Length: 245
Image (tube, one colour):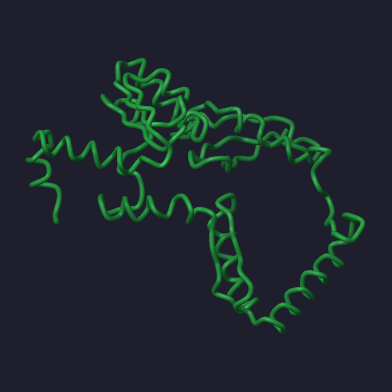
């Protein structure tokens, strides 16, 4: 059996595992012991996520929608229909009437090709990405606050934290192996504070759970900052040495 090293795409953890391939089909999954995130473990998504590849419900040919429903078509027919429709729209409404939406499920290279296709082939600059709705704001916030639009610590450091504050994240479901680090930190005595309208798994195990109303995250955080500053709880030395503005 051939083993192929790959990266799980179901969340941002980026766990590595080996796919066992036999007879042209994936028959097994083996976690990568040496990978710094997975460390020989996987969540249910990593273990079972490959099953869609050989699922009998998977579409194996293009479907074209007609008056009576969908019908199976050849790839050549489907590509020709797409080409004709794009040409018709460009001629009738101009290239600016076309927009392209890419996906976080794609690799960086695939997203690059998508925007290249939009600009060079379709002649439109209307290119968007699903992460703009959720992640773009965090990138700007982190870059403005910490100088980089990414986390300032490694994932493995979470396990050694004394206090963890979680807001806007159902960690054990969204990023299970990061959630695993949080759970390990709890077993080591870490205090976990969770602010979430829904009582998540981590919230049930937290030292303090705040069930604030949906949409009130900013008000909650502003209130916390107000109390910290009003009561002089901020680390003045750290602010003087490490921050500006």
